[in-house]
Image: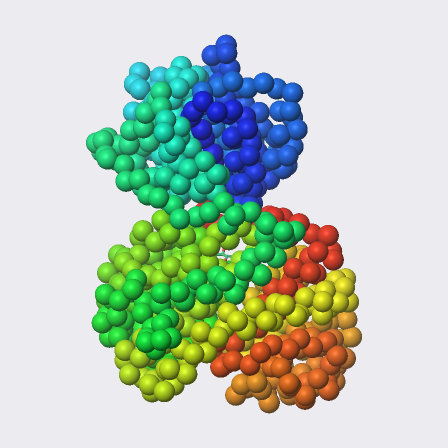
Length: 614
Ligand code: F6R
């Protein structure tokens, strides 16, 4: 989604904004621009559709000297992706400029009112409405910009994060947010305001996460933060524990490949300090205080979107199996609009990599109104989800830059497995020897994935070449592998732009089997578990209809090997933990197929890394 970067300081504004916008580009965008002040005391906007490189090229021969500046990468919502709709936007008077993330839901009503007051508009965006509303209120009330902003936002319905530039105050930046993240980096008298920390960490690790309705006011190198009631606050400065290498591709051609190969380490980080093999103990410090409520929970309701939703489905199987608590998994976007039944002894578990997904955050707010306990599984410390839930588990996968989620997904699976085991142990619904066996198996997962990654790439590259021109794929799995079939299909759709569907294998007979012919690749996740014979029968049915079977099997499987040549073997592990392993070849299959089809793997078309609007 859109990215914001603003800077106040003595360094080269052009360099800082352009390199920062490059860093933000992983979020997904279709145009980019900057707004700066000129020697003639006017605001100058440079903005173009397309990549940040396009903006950089257009600015090559232009000298910019401005004490403050704002930059933006736009992911189109209102109005197509073109130069005019790109941000920043100037007010009608030319006095103010804005970089804005989010959606002004009532922009049409506001626009009509502003038109009746003589305002004209260049773009189709809600953002241009917002800057003109602020401009109008400032003129009407003859007040300071900070006050005008506060008044204007009272009329705005929606979520936003924004930064303002004022031509009459050339050393000033004003920023605020509601429901969309904004973080301020501090380096002495220099300030960086951004929608996430990626463009900041090259400069400083001291940051302030702005809260909803707070206004940050930077003037002549001084920062002041006021709350919704205009009362000044002492800012809480946090030290980030993220290193620059974490947002660098290193020797990998793409972030996605780097992140797939990081999984042994990210899973290791996820269990670090939690799984103690010497003491044979599992500790989840983040939820420790809520274990009594979890033990008594009537029901666990998991809410999430996309890949995180599939992680939730895997988690639900294991939680129900070993904790004997009913678990339902809901798309956050459906949950929030369907008047769900939430009782006081229900526990809500929200899962989100970014912690900024608008639907998931809104679903949490709804559950809060019912006084439910809300736990989170999240990768981003300091995110909105981390701050709004009562307690939770950080997945510690490290920053995930590739748009298609990989290492964050396996870390979510690991966190859910640990949660299920901890809860079952507390509830005594699992025998001690079984619990201990699982702990040992959890501990072995990173090493197993490491070995797998060392061996499978050549075979998967061949499969990608063989099937790169297929127009459709079917993915089948049973039990724990039904969600993995859907996640594997999602990865292929997202980055290789091939239509793919994931099904529970037994559902094939109820319709999708009509699609099977010699041109249909069918990926079958068929590892050795209690459903093995059933999925073998499904594979036979596909073979009988000449479908092209790609099978993910447990190593030393001899039976399925006789049914198809396209086999990927994975190390054996208990069924509930197997999804962490079987998803790895499916991530690589999507990656290498996308490469074979010349697709932009890290920034697939139309996608955004965190979906901060509905
Ligand atoms: C797919 C993907 C998305 C996200 C979804 C939720 O690869 O990444 O489907 O899983 O947008 O995002 P989070 O987990 O940040 O809430």
